[in-house]
Each structure stands twice: as structure tokens, then as C-alpha cells.
Amino acid sequence: MQPQVETVKKTKRALSLAQNIVRDIEAGAHSPGDRLPHEDEMLARYEVARATLREALRFLELQGVIHLQLGRGGGPVVARPQTGDFANSLSLILHFMEADLRGLLELREAIAPDVAAYAALRATTGDLSALADCFKELERNEADNNFEELNRRFHDLLGWASGNPLFGLLTSTMHLLTREFSNSLGYSAQERAVQLRFLRSVLESVRTGDQAAARQAMSRLVSGSASYLAERSPELVSQRVKWGQI
Image (cartoon, rainbow, N blue to C red):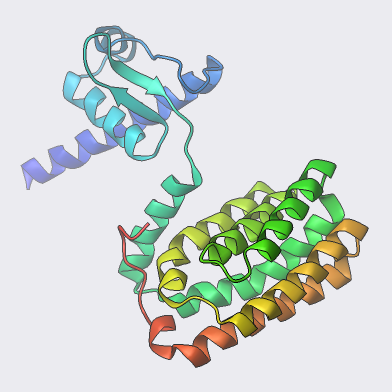
């Protein structure tokens, strides 16, 4: 039992050290690309064993907080955790929860209408411009293989236009988690036309600040999309989320 207890203690020390390093990054107002002190300096500063420091740095690298630059003059460099880092961690949890695509579709149905409503309330001029440009691309690519990717991009932009970064993060994360599923299926020409019609309504409602109309249009869009996927490929929506597919 003793080796196991010691391993747990070392892990806790490394995690505590990682938290201290993050606090120091924030206190020092470090930006992505800034170098952290060399290993010997960090050992002296935090008064920990070399193995503990390296474990803490590996943990931060996995979370996207830093990247370890190799070679002469290398070392820890400040990064910024991205949506993909969160999606990758979440997919591992969902893998063991045996979550499937249906669960992700239901989550989207639950939050997407409110995301659209908040976007109608808070979207900036820049947000509206980006959404309008994306929608024009969608129209131009209605029959193209890029349609699904552009569709996801429109929803991502809408999530961040909500003014709530949590909505933006969740929307983008769900798209990363479902990309492989949707790419393997695709939308029919008829379904693409339906998607465009509702997206046009969402965009117009967001542009005019009509929260109720934005919520209603998005609700009809995502519920219809979920029904379409379930009817066309019930075996697909039953597939489980697998870690490493992002």
C-alpha cells in the first residue's frame, strides 16, 4: 500500500504546483508566447523535486496552458487553452459515461434556442457582419461539400455572439464532438434548403433584435435537424462518443 500512497501524494503535489504556476502566470500578466523561467529557476522558486515540477508541467501542457519547447534554449512557453483542449477532455469523460450522439443532439436542442435569443440581445456590429458573411458563403456552397462545415461555423459564430463565452465554448465543443458523425452522413439537398430557410430567419431575427423570433426559429431548426438525423440514420445517433475522434 505504501507505494500507492506515495504516488497519490506526488500527484497531489504536482497538481498543487500546477495551480501555483497558473496563478503566477496570471499575476505576471504573461501572454501566449512568453517564456517561463528555466527549470533550475522554477525548482528554486517553488522548492519542489525535479520530478514534481516536470509532472506539473506535463499536466499544464495537456490542458493547453503551456507548450514545452524542445532544443537549446527551450522550456515552458505560455499558451492559451483552446476549445479543442476542452473538447478533448470532455470527450474522454463522455467516452466512459457511454454518451452517444443522441445525447449531444438533445443538449443542442436544449441550449441552441436560448443562444440565438441572447445573440439577438447582445450581438455586436462585428458579430452581425461575421454572421452575414458566413450565411452568404452557406448560400454559395449549398450544393458543395463545405456546407456542413460552414453550417457549424455559423452556429459557432452565433454562440460567441451571445455575449456569454460559456455558450460559445459549449456550442463550438459540441460541433467538434459531432463533426465525425455529421461528416459521415451529410444533409440531403432538401434538408440543406430547410436549414438555410431557418438560418435566414435566425439571422434576420438577430439583426433586428427580436429575441422571441430568434428563439423560435432556432428551436424549429435544431429539433427538425435532430428528427432528420434520427429518421435517416438511427444507428448513427446511437453511436457512442469515442475519445480521440476530435
